[in-house]
Figure 1 (cartoon, rainbow, N blue to C red):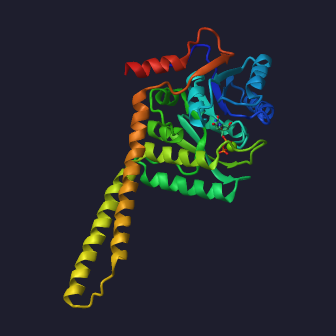
Figure 2 (figure 1 turned 30 degrees about the vertical axis):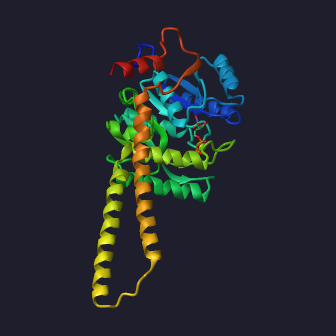
Figure 3 (figure 1 turned 90 degrees about the horizontal axis):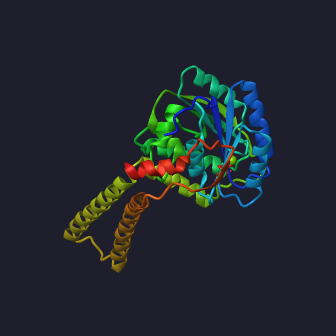
Length: 333
Ligand code: UDP
Ligand code: MG
């Protein structure tokens, strides 16, 4: 879809923003000064993900003062992963860097990402060696999550790696051709392959503002990741069922033997109740897991566009709306 144009910048920086008024000015300053240092042509694609604060106004202001800024305003809050997707679809650089707006990923690391790209790597991802300014709860659960998903996913997903990364145009186009709705971008990037390499870095604390990932969103994100990249939970249902039946069978044999040896004292209705509850619980869990996948299939089958754009600024008219052409592409496939 978005083939590189003759006048396309070398590097696009995609920044998803949701209520980031307190950091935007500083983020823009650090990004531009880093990119000036890199000495390459670039564009900054800011995606406003339905912010309710002054973020869109500030982005429009930035665009007026800096022609390298392009702004995509989504029609409502679609979530981090979809905002990134929109930014990727609108970017035109030969390489695209994804970076959060809150300066947790230090912009200066981009220089290293670019250096690796110049060496021939098509995906250069930042791996967090340390995470500052985050609760022990978040760091620990994130650590478990990456290890779990890596174990059960069909493809290896690098540990402790967020969305801070550089993608060559080839990888960006590959992602654009993946129409799935539950977008776990870091897993999808692993899936596309190409030559990939990690760049370790220390993740800083947020420059200002608060995390937009509530506990609920974090859980949803983790479940999306696991269900999009593994069918192990479906198998879990079979295993649980087998384990429960095996347990029941062994229990039955034991009871018969004890009864024959006249050692069994009637256990009463409690045992029956517990067994019933146990089996009922296993069945509900399994039904729930199947339901999760079914819900996702339902979501996919509706074939709605991934996001809607309210307005854009800084793009020349020659650019058609990639989200429209993307939806078109999905419809035709
Ligand atoms: N973000 C977004 N839409 C959302 C939530 C977050 O575009 O619905 C952006 C946010 O502005 C930031 C990035 O995604 O640039 C990461 O979010 P955040 O820093 O809140 O997450 P955390 O680093 O705490 O996991
Ligand atoms: Mg953050």
